[in-house]
Image 1 (cartoon, rainbow, N blue to C red):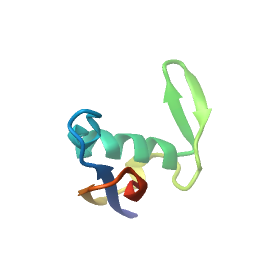
Image 2 (cartoon, helix red, strand yellow; image 1 turned 120 degrees about the vertical axis):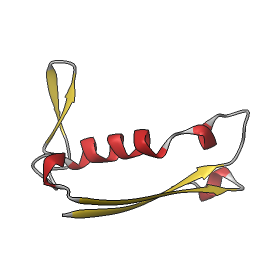
Image 3 (cartoon, rainbow, N blue to C red; image 1 turned 90 degrees about the vertical axis):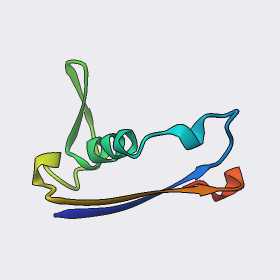
Image 4 (cartoon, one colour; image 1 turned 135 degrees about the horizontal axis):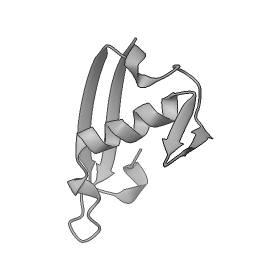
Length: 73
């Protein structure tokens, strides 16, 4: 399985959104795609699109800065 992710972040230094690291954004995405997300000791139900992130073999990630908060995705 492969993932092609594009993160659109509002470019505003005062909000700190544009400073988010792509590796941290991917961690959240991969946790959500799994059957269970782990929060401490309690599993939380994920989307269940993959059993867990060990099934992902290829990742393409791009962080794109946008000029308005409405364009964030």
